[in-house]
Image 1 (cartoon, rainbow, N blue to C red):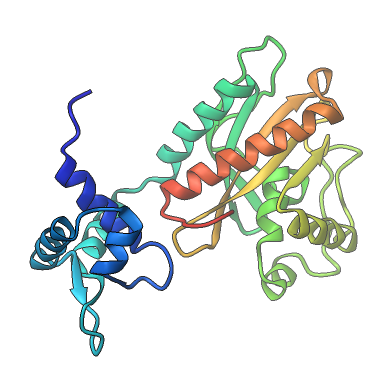
Image 2 (cartoon, rainbow, N blue to C red):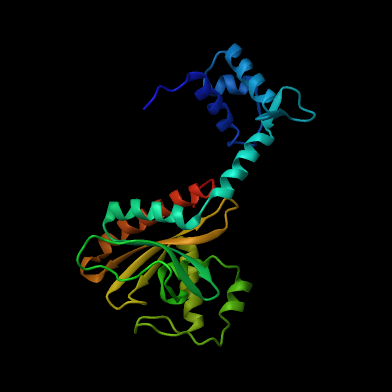
Length: 257
């Protein structure tokens, strides 16, 4: 790894300060927060302003906010994002940690579509594939995504009289029971599937958010029942949350998931 350039590091430290608070800073604020010499801060602020990375706040002399250049860079980054590709990388990292099958899925109508998948190395593992479609109400990722919908949209997709297909004896087939389950998922921020799409597999899932904070996908960890336990469930839930948070960050989300 090459040597870090101190001036560049300090300039980036200043820009990252604008992510906090109300998004405005003065030179004395920066001096205090970063413990840098006033002359150094003045030179860096002058340079950043000249390159349009920061601009003075109208009506507040001496205070700055982010300028147009970071927005342009962020927009270009967003254009290059590929949820499937980013999801595959994060799923691989999560799978390497727990050695279980990891999926990333999106919601389409009342189904989920798996857009990324990394297998466990165990001989006994879940058989699935990226591109596979399953009823959302039978999966942890699907229930996580359904739970993120506004009530009006959920009702339009799954009305009270809907017939919910069963994939196993444990599948939820009653819309009212599904709504109760989704309410609990919203409260916990996690979804559990107890052998509802496969009689031999349980899963946990966490929500993935984009830069606007909307849930756009879910990440799950699937475990054969021979390796499932309530003690391990807690560990897997935390790992799913961590993986979903990392993928959310890659998509530009700021803050807790």
